[in-house]
Every structure is written in structure tokens, then in C-alpha cells.
Image (cartoon, rainbow, N blue to C red; front, side):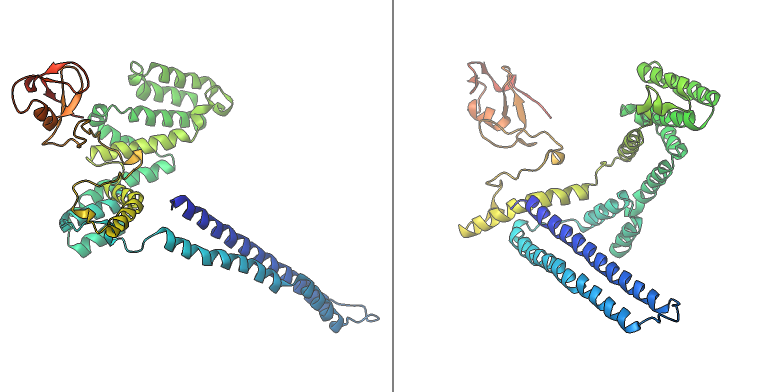
Length: 385
């Protein structure tokens, strides 16, 4: 069962809950309004010739409340909600196997490494209290090395939320060479954001001086971008109605923030996406296939964990594909360090072991299985991805 089915069922429960809550508040408001009106009639001063008949007021209130029928309204909406709520756990039980022990191998993990990975995940997400708790409970004080660095990153991000770019620019200046090596123009993007803000809130002279000081050094490599920024000077204070209105879009701040996170992690030698988070997400996506495989293999009295390769593919999204993988078209084996891909003179690629088998472990030439060309082992060279 696809996860979309579970999500759709969950969305239906949420919709019914919101509808039930809305009807409940509506019924309560109606009852409250009628009671308030009746109280106002009882306590209001009346002409002595027509004294207020409290009994008639209360009787009228009773008829109005019966007409509103709040209990009937609440029972109806609550019944619909309960029906969907009762179906949802059954759907979860059907969609997920609560016993996932059949879908993983017993591996002796290095607990020290695992603790560090989890602590680093919390620090990278900005959950510093959780990271500290893991370190204290696991006795891993050295895992706190990244805390201060990620703490600095989140201070920069908090400042950028208020359009304060000074902390970000200080970090960029300190790491200018590394950013240049990465091919990043983050410094230009930050100065462009600052420049556009000055055009909106400052004077034209201040914006021009800022451009001369901080944007001019980028003119040679980014001529078109600088010319566009200079054109904004003619529309100071009214950029929103100018040909350069797109420079006011919040997406420029969002993209610069995202690139700062990416470059900050790169300078630290870390992935932009937490390795722990990626592993959990990949496992979550692949788990249904592994559970189904485990059940099928168990029915056939076969042990899948003893296999070197899964008999079925576990399809993961492109976001989980970080390295190129070569599968030999002859042996159908995945390349490895011991069995690397080899480029033949005819430009076809086979794994090393396949080439050795085709040559019959000799120096003589052999025919390529995909074209008439012939080659020897010595003529094949190893390639890497």
C-alpha cells in the first residue's frame, strides 16, 4: 500500500476534525447568544404597566434552544469524526508491519560513532539542547566540537531573518578563499541584497558609495548582474514599480540563505543534509519493500539476510543517489574497488573480472561482447565515477 493512501486517510480525518470543531463552536455560540439575549430581557428595566414575565422569557428560550438542537448538531459531526478515526488505525495496521525486525540485519555498530552522528544531527538542525543531552547521557564530550560552529551558523541565519547581513558578511570574508574554491558567488549575492535594501531605505548617495566599494570588484566576472544593479539607482525608493522589481522578491533572500547553509556545511566538511536524516528517510522509503520481501522469503523458507545481493530492487528517489553506480553488462555485478569498471579501446565498459574471464586470464586479445573490436587486458584502463 502506497504512503499516499495513508496520507489521504489522514487528511480526511483532519478535515472531519476541523468540521466537527467548527460545528461545535457554532452550536455553542448559538446557545450562548440566545441565553445572553434572555438574560438581557430579564435584567432590563420594564414599564410598570407591562412587567416582565420571566416565565415567558424562559419558555421562549427553551423553544429556541429546542429549535437549535445543539446536541443533535454535536452528535452528527462527532459521529462522522469517530467513523473516520476508527478506520484510520485499521488502515495503519494494514499498511505497516509493526514488527520491522525482519527487515534489518544484525550489525555490530560502533556505538561511539553512532552517538556522534546523532549528536551532530541535532546540532546541524539547531536543536542544541537535544545534542547536549545525547552527549551527556552517552558520555561523548568530543562530539560537541561542531556545536559552536553550527551555533554560529544559526546566529547568522537569525540575523538574516531581520535583514541584518553583517554576521553573514563577516563569515564570508573569513572564508573567502574557500568559497572561491567552491565556485560560490555568495559574497556578491549578500552585497546585492544589502544594496537593494539601501535603495529602499537609504539615500542614493549611500547606495552609490556602497556599490563602488563592494560591488565594483565583481564587475569583471559578473558584468550583467552589476549593470542590472546599477540600473536600480534611477528608481530609488520605487523599485516595486520599476523594471527591476524582481530584485525585491523574497526568493532572493531565501536562496541566499539556502546557499549560505550549503557553503557553511561545505567549509565544515559536512553535508548540507544531515547524514542521519538522509539514512532515516531512505530507510523509511525502502522499508515496505524489505518487509514484503522478508514475508515472501519466509513463506518460501529462505533467508534473505544471508544473500549478498537483494533479489529485488529497492527503488529510492534521486535525492538518495549520491554516487554513480556501474553494473557490468556481462556479469550483472555492481562494480567495486576490487572489481572496478574498465574502459576498452572500443569505448565499451566492462568490469575487471569480466575482462579477465573473456581474456581467459592471458595476454592474448579477446573480442568485445558488444562490437567486433578486439583488445587485450593491457589495453583496458580503469575508470572512476
